[in-house]
Amino acid sequence: MAIAYREWREGDDLALLEIWGGPETVQAGQFRGTLAPSGNSPWRRCIVAEDVVDGVAIPVAAAVVHEASLHPERLWAYVEVARDHRRAGLGSTLLTMLRHEAAQAPSGVSKLRCKVEPGTPGAAFAEAAGLAPIQRSRLVVVDPAPLKLPVFGDGSESAATDQVEDLATGSVELSDVVGRYYTAVHGWDSPGELSVAAVQRLFLDDLSGAHGAIVLRAPKASAFGHGIAASRKGRLEGFAISYAQGIPGADADGAGADASAGPTEVFLGHEPKLDADQARAAVRDLLALIAYQHPVMLELDDAMTALRAVVEPLLVSGKAHVQGSETLVVSDAA
Image (cartoon, rainbow, N blue to C red):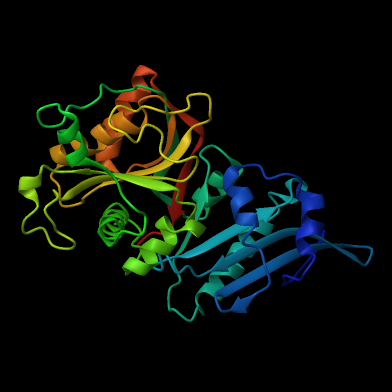
């Protein structure tokens, strides 16, 4: 086997697809989309390994390393080798080459990270290369009516209306809480500075796929002295953003939800300044509302402690299940 290495060229994706076949994992399918010609805006280096047989070069492996505007403290890296060329040192050689390129990244960042599925060849390769898990993520589908509906204030419709509100995704108040929550649950891999405009672009505008949002507020008496966008309304304690058909059961009684449709993808979070009990209560009440008559799908990271405290008992009781396989984010040691 005579191996030659070169930069990625247009058409390599099709040539490698013939050799690789379909992606072995969800993560592999996602990372294949990052294989592209090297460039500096954004910074990316992509390398192809060719097996040269009788003077004919056939692409059999590829690797990429690139900077990220979100979570800029590490570089994303990915290596894939054709099944019949594994255990021959190609992956290790490509990773060494990526590390050499990373050392010259203009940001000065050289630490690598990747996503793998536990128990796969990719996970074993990452472990052998010294990449260790820094986070676990699961997609969890919560079945309809997993929790008893909350009672707000005196139980009247007006009390519920005071605390549960449809809120425009363009709301500055919502953007502020979403951005601070995302930062708070990603201390393990900082997203960097998140402006309101960045939060809008990433999570809340039409291009992000956001379809609607409901929020949970504290009683009105808590409104005074709580910073941005404080008003006569209670402070925003929790949020649920829909990325599919719209949030099912957005009214306090869950009326009008379509139980025949698939689960709605929802980003569920809370005001990060809440204490642990308050955060769990906010997340629990919102989940009870949005999943009252319709299943929802949540991305659950281990760092989301309040959401885990609410969802994991549902997994144990069978009222929720993990969809697909877990994802591990693995990284070079600090």
